[in-house]
Amino acid sequence: MSEENTNGAVAPADAVTGPAFTVEKIYVKDVSFESPNAPAVFNDAVQPELQLNLNQRVQRLGENAFEVVLAVTLTCKAGEKTAYVAEVQQAGVFGLVGLDPQSIDVLLGTQCPNILFPYVRSLVSELIQAGGFPPFFLQPINFEGLYAETLRQRQEQGETSLADSEPAGNA
Image (cartoon, rainbow, N blue to C red; front, side):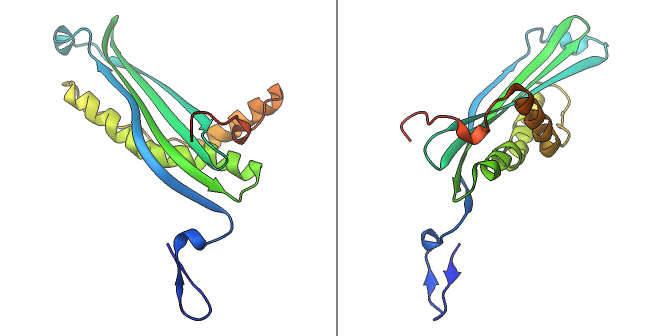
């Protein structure tokens, strides 16, 4: 990204000042798939039950860098037997410069997981299909609604914003 100045010259992207939100890196932090009752579970004619667990962690890496991890665990049971468990932790490093703490908190709680979610959905689907089961597609998630609920809970408990966490690691 670059900006043209008044004399027509193009300034490099790093010369741009003002608020900025950048995606620095997207990566798989952890992935696991188990099918403890295969191959017997493939013959069960029981209606499967799915349980989805979703959570998000934010870690400050530096003054303007944050790691956001979107974790999904999908457990499928066929009667009393576990058909499969798929766990994915999709992470990203995001740069947030020149923003007030409230704006940073909103971006970390809504925009970052929205960016990570398609990667999670794809990886979960691939794992399940590779495990010999019919494809499963995670339905869209309203991260704005989840963030609003989380914000309400944090305010009730007197907790600080996501952006107030202490730096970790060497970044």
